[in-house]
Image 1: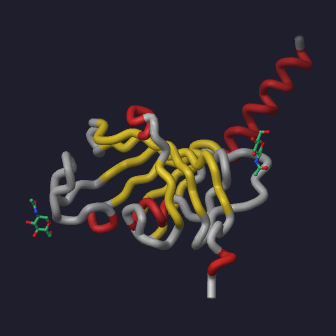
Image 2: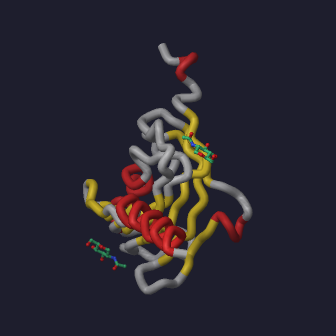
Image 3: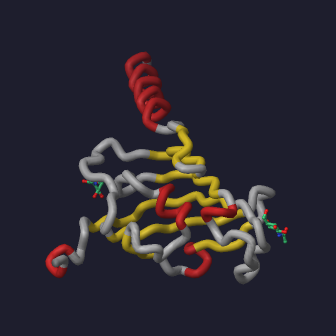
Length: 142
Ligand SMILES: *[C@@H]1O[C@H](CO)[C@@H](O)[C@H](O)[C@H]1NC(C)=O
Ligand SMILES: *[C@@H]1O[C@H](CO)[C@@H](O)[C@H](O)[C@H]1NC(C)=O
């Protein structure tokens, strides 16, 4: 019993150290909610990212979710396929990592209405990197 208790406490300790890191990059608040321990490669420019996310307004109201649509969001980093804040918030991420992002309007849809997103909206995302491919188009680069 005593041994099991120590193992559980030890595991929890590791989890606490790995999760919960928080910083701001160019105005995007980034918090690591989960980081796999076997992280060997992190996302960078030109990589292809596959993500699942839940997008909410700061008041908690959901505006979009790949889980509801049953379709992941895939994009090439640095091409503007997604809002700027999302690119900033998913840089140097490892496969399996989960983050919480707070994106100000100027790095999202700005002062224009976008679907059900009102002008000047701050957006939050709980986002998981489910797949990461290193620069899939490098063979075609000049
Ligand atoms: C880490 O381990 C998980 C589970 O075994 C695996 O699915 C994942 O691909 C691994 N990630 C890396 C970067 O090796
Ligand atoms: C959005 O922000 C811009 C710049 O601050 C401002 O000029 C504009 O009136 C705002 N729009 C709305 C609908 O609040």
